[in-house]
Length: 167
Image 1: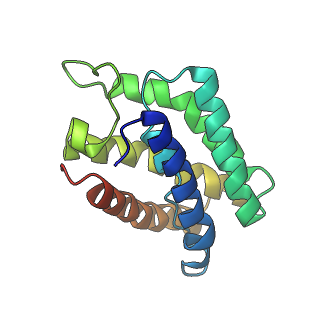
Image 2 (image 1 turned 90 degrees about the horizontal axis):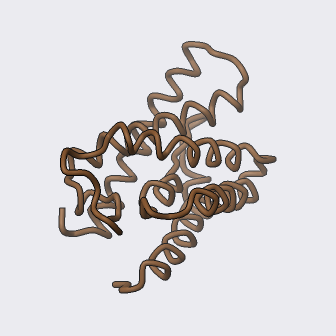
């Protein structure tokens, strides 16, 4: 659809933000959250300069905070994930390494790799959001993390199937 990676990422930013803020914010049962916006971070190219990565994640997070009245909750979690992403990618690097300019998607690196990669980032994201919201650990909090994580993973995988038909 987009030949230019910049236009694809700009479109993805706004599309995921609008889906999150206008649709997913109102879907969910009680305290179970559905998040799709971390896909923006997951699908950015590896070669992006780290300062730009942190800035873009902050921008996405603060934009979601505007919809959720989050007072920086989502921005802080996205910035933390931006700092953790190079470490996560380094630990999950394929045997042959990543190719230059490669998008970290299911179509490029395989469905199994993408599930592991997105599961790590989505679980950290869900845990941090709920932990910072409640500021305590409990079994109920862990259940919320687990259920929200599973539902968010289903949404992220659905996004991959719809927008990346090479899987």
